[in-house]
Amino acid sequence: MSRIPDLSVSELLAGMRRGDFSAVEVTRAFLEVIERLEPSLHTLITFTPELALRMAEDADRRYRAWRRADSPAEEALPPLLGIPLMIKDVLCLKGVPCTCGSRILQDFIPPYTATAVQRLLDAGVVVLGKTNTDEFAMGSSTENSAFGATRNPWNPAHVPGGSSGGSASAVAARMTPAALGSDTGGSIRQPAAYCGVTGIKPTYGRVSRYGLVAYGSSLDTVGVFARSAAETALFFSLMAGHDPLDSTSAREDVSPITLPDEPALKGLRIGVPQEYFIPGMSAEVEQTVRAAIAQMEHLGATVQTVRLPHTEYALPVYYLIAPAEASANLARYDGVRFGLRAPAERLWEMFDRTRGSGFGAEVKRRIMLGTYALSAGYYDAYYAQAQKVRTLIRQDFLDAFQQVDVIACPVAPTPAFRLGEHTDDPLAMYLEDIFTLPANLAGVPGLAFPAGFSAAGLPIGIQLMSAPFREEILFRTAHAYQQVTDWHLRRPPTAP
Image 1 (tube, rainbow, N blue to C red):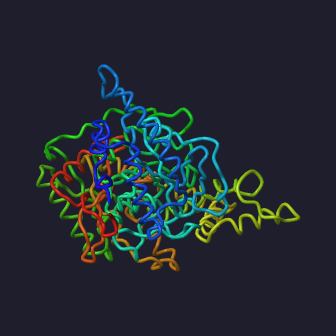
Image 2: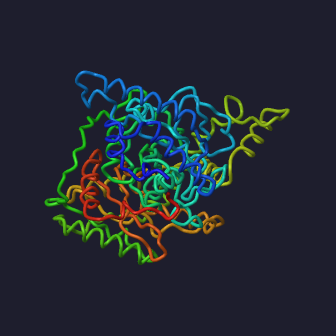
């Protein structure tokens, strides 16, 4: 087995630029890992080896032309030329199926490419495939996919988290250096923690949602997984920025992210919210997170307690707002315009059969919850009230960030749970996102990265949050921590 899949992104780029190995050799090395591990982990819905090799060949042509130049300049090459990437199957890539993990879209081939994906294509990435996801990104375990569950590479009897579990599992298993995901209520941060990788949920509006199939339009964000904070920052900085194709895209400048060589956090103010250390959470999770915060304090940060008093309402608020938006967004899947169409003699019968057979149980559950919350007589009592409390949750964060630079807390109350453990208990499944939902409701960025392991050998992550558009401080903090720890470098037993 080639050592290429163990190399960092910077090592891969340096090797290709020196000519130590080609982009095709890099791509073939990752394709070999995929072919070996995919049958057991099921990280992909659509595997694209032919496309990947064509892209890699094009990258090699550009490298050869660059080397032949009289005075080749590094900036003349795209910054990620030849680096393999996987894309969560809720982001459109022209000409490649986009199923959203649902039978209702199993034959849909988009005629356009998502802006976040296009920006990475322009940067030179090589697409290995589209990763598995909970149907329409609704889930916390990637068990809700119509195409089968993804497994955790640290222990295949456990879930990888969701809904971006396919992406997180693939990065952890060395099947790809990086993968795109989406985060509506924790769907990047929770899988990152469960799989022992680094994942960023940007500020709402920081990365374009154009080409992302909508779940909750006021909550959805596009982010990325990689092994380290430095690698994640590189992909994020290339995706971020205003997009005229997305009306919710923020008009904020994106400055280059510079990470210090020295692991120092002097002057950084870290807030620890006691509302995130709740009865019933795993003692191993609490001990690991507090130890990571102590390590950051040792690097020079100051630590203080902050209050986020409306945290307890985040779960019910989210499960009113997100299903309501999903109910509206998923109304378009009716068998008329695109996607699955079930045969029937009458129009309403066709609607019923198409949606009944095309949607899975969790999607139907959330559509019904959302439709109820938006219905006449209940809108003011439920949805409107939830939006008011959402404003209070956001204000809690803004008040806290007047006192501190980052907030540090757990990602999930437990390490990865076993496959099937919460399948028949939706409320228990929803509780797995209790620490990640508030960031989406408030629109603030969050970064999750590994901080230790449970006694059973499962990764445990820590979450950092900052004020809107301050992603750089998250990356700088995590990078300093990762310079003095090796949790992010550890390989699962299934990895080659």
